[in-house]
Image 1 (cartoon, rainbow, N blue to C red):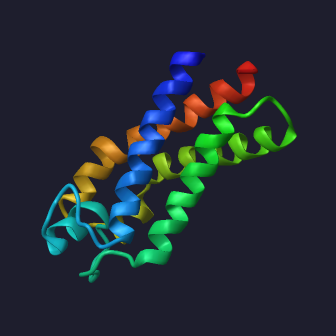
Image 2 (image 1 turned 30 degrees about the vertical axis):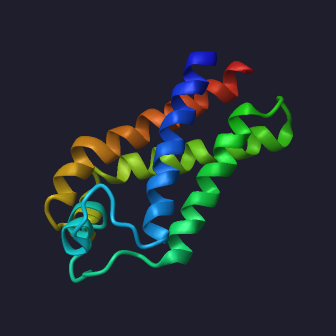
Amino acid sequence: MMILALLLSVVLGVVAVIHAAWGFGIWVPIRNEDALVRAAVGAAGVTRMPGPIPCFLVVAGLLVVLGAIWMQSGVLRGIVLWAAAVVFLGRGAMAYARFWRKMAPVEPFATYDRRYYGPLSLVVGVGLLVIVSGGF
């Protein structure tokens, strides 16, 4: 369980750092905003990255989940981890849903979503379920 908690913490931490950079207007890992929008957002007609508020809301949510992984067992921890697992599993499943394909058809996002973002979300969701149900 400790290795799983560490791996999930690293993944959530890296994703949080990337979103924080975006919140500060630092375009990583792609320096060109237009190319980054096509790779990270994927919605038709969107030409700019989300602003600081949505980016930092994602960061805050990820940090809450990361903190909950390391909390002692309890009701609050259980609620946070179960809710996060549902969100990640839902996000992962959406990568393969027809309605989502219509909402986010722009390449390379559409391919990255099916190949990387969706599977990563599913793995994180399952990992959180294992942690919360395993009593770590």
